[in-house]
Length: 454
Image (tube, rainbow, N blue to C red; front, side, top):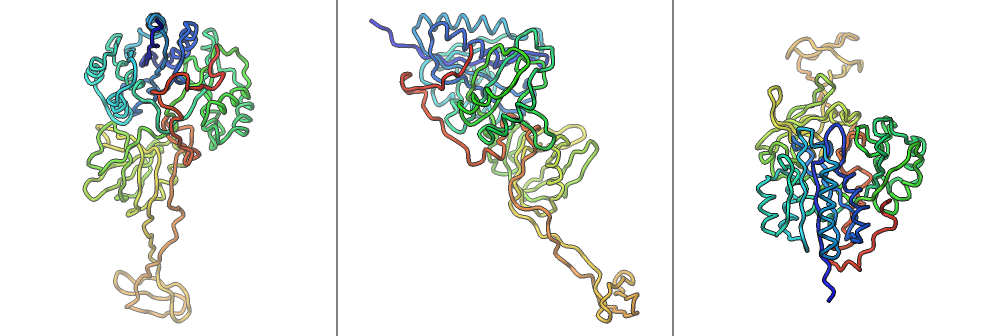
């Protein structure tokens, strides 16, 4: 009698360090090795970015999940392979690297989705993760302090049934990883011209800097983000390289979706490390401080809070500096805890101006006799015209409304300083829903071909 196939969800997190490694690379290795075992993939590998404000994150705070099905025997072999690869590729010598590996079988319960939402939008604990894994009959392996178990479970629970994008990541051979990346920048610019806006954040318009190539010591050669697997594959074919690509994989991801940001009902609910959307009126006009950062404060009538646009946000700061007291704004960003020098502050990721306050200037009155601008004779002493000698002790300054050189609308910093999750302006109106459900029969699912090599 033929056995029913087994569905297995695999979550992996916290395997890398600032000096190297990449959890997505482990995912890419596993795609090849699990495919050789005859296992089928329910979905593209999922690259899930979690709350970018947590203090213990490594770089982009990304976790990976793989969703497969096959015979019980093949699944058991797969688990052995997965454990071996994680142990071989994780940077155990780095103090802050605490890998986690989670296995969940069958259909995913709603409780795991809720856990993932909280891991993306707030903070969750190891106890919560372990309790859920036990309750639903899953398995977890934690190395060192095992903090990666949290992200691994969150990656499994985030099924990307809301808005999502795709990223094709190409990886370098080990012998090249200490060398400058051999990517032809002109070809990357051509690729952007040919595929934008279906691909996004390929380059920074302010500086011209190429953004598809990372700067760190990780094994990624380049990553192309887009709206479909077809377009990132087509873009991949346009990029010229001067070194051999070891492998490449298409991930489905929450990149560029703003999935971390959630509306907050009042500034009093803004807590450290939370990504939030909040509304308020400008209470104190913006000021530029040492380092080029711009600070201002807003209030919702109950609480006031500082907001900051940092120097790397470039021209975005000039928009912020044009705000005045009374402007109604909606701010998007992460809450930074208070420090010795600064109170709790929202680090701006974007800004929406909802309503501009009127701006006024005070001018000396015109002389009714000759039309020249008069001068003050002193506080509450009226005005005198130097041209013709006319005096008016009752005259007062004229209040005049000044046109604002800013308009209501949404403002986003340049792509070079976007977080992975930040939705760029070009994606507004392109949001999508998951084209399938993970509860469908595997035979109903059709992944784009090819979606990985090898």
